[in-house]
Amino acid sequence: MTTLSTRLQSVHRHIHHACRAAGRDVRSVHLLAVSKTQPADAIREAHAAGQQMFGENYVQEALDKINTLADLRPKIEWHLIGPLQANKTRVVAEAFDWVHSVDRLKIAERLSDQRPSHLPPLSICLQVNISAEISKSGLSPDNVRPLAHEIARLPRLRLRGLMAIPEPAATLATQREPHRALHSLFEQLRADGLDLDTLSMGMSADMEAAILEGATMVRVGTAIFGARS
Image (cartoon, rainbow, N blue to C red; front, side):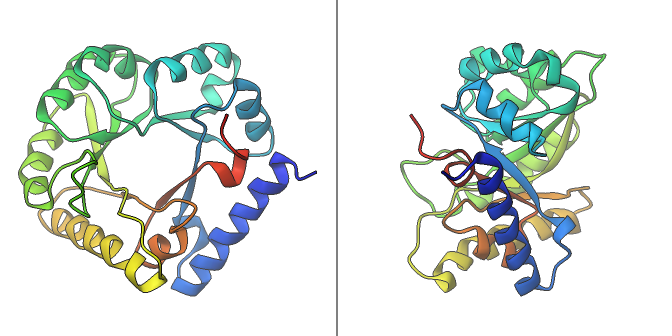
């Protein structure tokens, strides 16, 4: 039976292979283990195997796990990658290290106002609807730059970069196109003077394409934890 540790090693091998194909340093790409619907024990097992960054989609589920794994809190980095409603910003500002799904100034302002002063600034990515899908959240590319500059001025946040979930595509070439577009937008923001370092893009099915186009963080769930319950 394949163990979680073995699956985690396999994902790292895929990342290393993609980095070599892209001519990139393997240390430039970080693995975010998507642990939504997985029990706290599975996260503990993944952490014991060397994983430190975990992504959750649902706020209350994540808070339960954060509390259950309180003994590991200094060693785990918690990322919210799912939608965030205004009535949940306080608990997220207090409990998480990163939020990848910011697409409104109101949400960013609430997170900044509610981030406790004893914690470091909350790391933020703007979610971009790079494939213009009606069913998906995120900013249209045309709206990213003005919002990015406004959020970069908020005192208790650190704008780190951009996140996207591109529309599925069948070939490597077509998978690369939206990732290339997001990278181009990222570089425009950096040229504007914003100190960005994170392109959160790529999942199990399009990880290679994302890394070839400059991803610095890939989000992988099932390939690590197995099928979700």
